[in-house]
Length: 484
Image 1: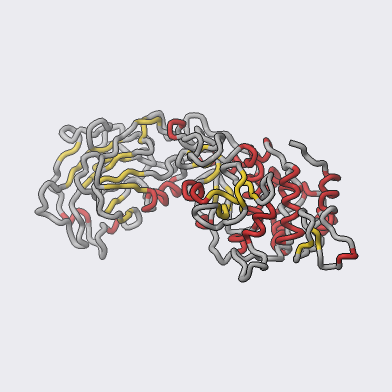
Image 2 (image 1 turned 60 degrees about the vertical axis):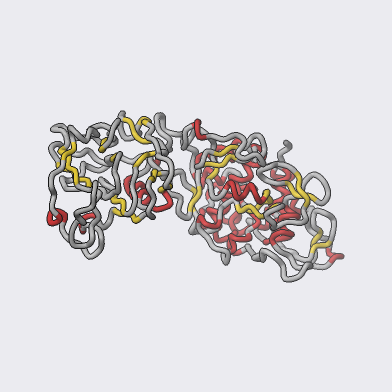
């Protein structure tokens, strides 16, 4: 593709201006018709005048540039106009993302033309918010109709993509989980693995710059490499690589002009000054060898957990696996029970329920070394390492809720299902792991099949750790051990 020089960009912006004969408040849109809305000072040199007078782009601050694109966001589009003549989001998309045939739009993930009408329908195409709504804003926010991050996409594809972050296979997830193409309705160079979504190559740089804009424009949003992604999107390092590999094209530059002159009044600075991405977001990291995460996300763990009793409350715990976040000292008693806690004591008299205790080996258990109860797990032989201590309710203390008081910050209530597996993040800081493990959305379960255990290399040590299908059979209340 052909790329424009700085002078060509200015000329392109100027081409959208209207002669005085048409009136001060009119403009000619790229299709050659007189458009109803005009925003002035959208030429690149005019738009950034206040910043350029103070310093070169290399010295601009995020605060100053963020204020500029917010102040000049002069038109908040409705999703649908009140009448057929009103401007709205879908008219803007049709104008900004035309196909290469008349009366069409270009679908971002299928990379094909589609009729511009009808739209906003599950059978046709809809508005793809590259930064998903449930990652940091609501339908009342300007972000909901901000055209700098909205593209046309097949409605059924949007349901498959959901709120996945953008990235490449074999980075934050194992290659075996990769699906190419992402769906049967997406382009051949798309992919997804349950954590990332890879768009067609021709759109990767444009998507990266759209997300850079969103991070800058909306203070509550953040691009990052480390989950959990609350009000945030990943993966920043991959987006930086795409930004460098796929510079702005003529189409993207022209779209940026139209978005400002015709629809919103503001520009995406990362299209106009690509070097700002490195200034504001740094250089991309590479996945840490032997892990599925970026170096920034790997932290040094604090000293070992002070000796204390920990427990997991489960139902029919045929296989329970612990992943310690600290070195666990030797000769320390660990308890596990499937007896319910009623607030004052353990419920007794229920068949096949009880309490087990294990004393850790003399030299302790290192952080990252899996252990637990059940076949195939270190220290997991119920006949040799775990025993029935006849523990009384008093040994657990009392609480106003159904939790022992010392564990009230480490529990999660799950619906009654026979089987669960943990499907959340793994290679994170302790604080982030704790938050993810205590998030019900991180657990998947059913009443049908059993989930098997796969052994993988742990990023915490040379020991094995569970794959995404970490297996536990439980119901009711889960209390996560070794996170306090």
